[in-house]
Length: 526
Image: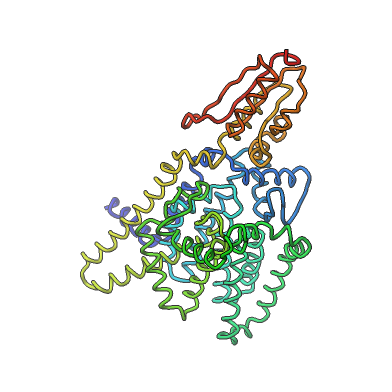
């Protein structure tokens, strides 16, 4: 009897708390997908990530606090401050740059659940958060050290707090929504397009909900004040330094003559088509954003996204459906309005806060219609539910295999994350030579510069400087990556130091030649 009683209590507890248990499992999945092997995947460091690290040194060592940093083109700074916390604790390691985005990736799953639950109900929210937790495109960017990884979280925060403010009319929700909206502009340039969604929401309230606006005018004025205070530093920087602030966006725009071939209209049409098809037909070819060419969504989720869009458009007069559609298409604009590297998973990452919600709306609609078709046939109802559960299980399996197996074992992944320059940094850190020289380009050497910061002293040379460098009267250590200039560098060093020793070094992953070292042991080249 006691055993049956205990089993009954456990069953009762599970039945009563099934949604909470499922959400906890989804969060655990999100943590696993974002933190498992984070110290080795991605397997290197891209120069753009390393540039963040170099700015972080300025923050930590020189208290150089800015709204926008220009080490590697104009980049908003909020993300760097979170990364700086981990660099302070873990040192100038690759893992330190990737902890913050992984955390933001988990939080994005949580807040996508919260806003979707508030707008569309608990089942839709569980579906949306699960799909997002295991989606390989989002996982890839959540594990990169790029500031774009914050955008889905910031959009989900605004959506949740704004939804709660609209429903509850509580002041603190207004303040939280305006603060999240303002801080989002400090994350990544693409977030600016989310302003169109907020503007649309304001126009909707002014035209169709005037009584609500009048009754909440105090909270609205407070939220506007909070927004203006928080956005002021960025606004001042953009006004006083317009060239620096807009340089990156202007360089990739479809209006750029060097990219549009003199036909901006056709370029815009092509970029729109590529961006729309990236979810279900052909995805980003850049290994830093995606397994090259693979659509961001599998077949089942792609079909559900299409169904969800049809449902949302059919209910467009209801504000929540119009809002989620607005979020989706507005956050595609950062990719659509560019003409370089399309499809572009990083510029499109803002759609992640809505694309999974829309797909979940489609799945939920499918289940509802199935249950209405078979109101009394429990076998048919269960078959439908089990089929959806099985397809979701496959979605998780596909997500894991696509990132941790296919992407992790793709040689292009190692090239995308500059395996050679990372290994060069480790060699420089362990080499005890008094005279050390790295022969590489400035941008190319950023990962090495980050890894060796305060750990190794060396001089950066290009081929021209190497050619004119006087012969050294002490032993020297040269290191340089395999490139089109390698033969020229080898010829120069052999001519200068005939008795020097060359050593090629290969990847431990696929035996690809990565870099050379050259050790001189003679004086004055004799």
